[in-house]
Length: 332
Image (cartoon, rainbow, N blue to C red; front, side, top):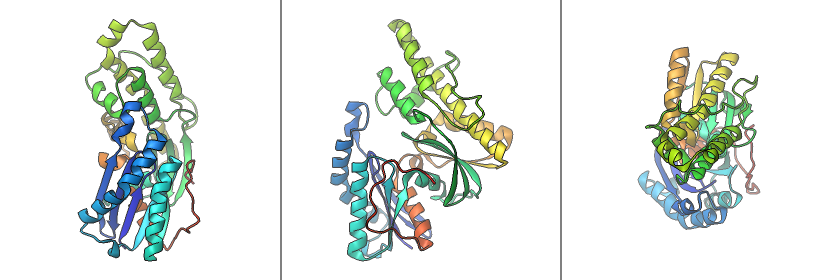
């Protein structure tokens, strides 16, 4: 089956072609207009998707040496995300499916991140523990089998990606904060400040990152600008170390408690070099098998949506044309 995937849940317009033999193309257009505002502006995101959706789909087809007449199924994100952005991709997919009378399926964006580990024919086998860490989501999931999930824990406030963005904004580093802090922290001393590790010792798999973000804010307020400028790299390295330690420790603990050997990362924050290094170190030490998609498949992309849709369409599952965007969709 040849599946066209479409992803427009936030500020990336993406299209991909996925077949029984794997991925043929994956085109992603990131919207730079939001940089000046320090965050995604929903109305601007929706308008950008409208302008980009047709040329991006055409580029995906060209890259795959494919024509629309050869597409046998459509997969599209229907949530969670920004309702206006989702609406653009969802209606575009419905239009193609209706006009060509081909099957289509709505894909849960969070589940798509889990499937990112399968885009390049990963050897990962179920069951496994998946840590999904993106801009708006931090969840620890027991993947019993593909399509069957148990959410073990999630963030009670800020997601990890949000904490990165907010700390970067406090320090006037720019947007998005994750890649900027990751790069800057490489030259910093992660032991310079002992920022708190929220919920690290609590007997659950939930997360909370508002506390460490607030600790950074208080540190910035109580110290002189000269010191902050001198130790900027040390501050972000210390913040990142605190956040990553919690993510790694709770994920390892869940795998150990459930006696599951395989761990998979997913989501935009999974492209963070320090996080990947810490996970590799711990998993090697404790003999867990770790799976991490390449950075291009960690951030929002249509390849993971096409891969997920391919799985469900091959099973005969279809969506109906009354499906609407679900901006607060959960994984179930």
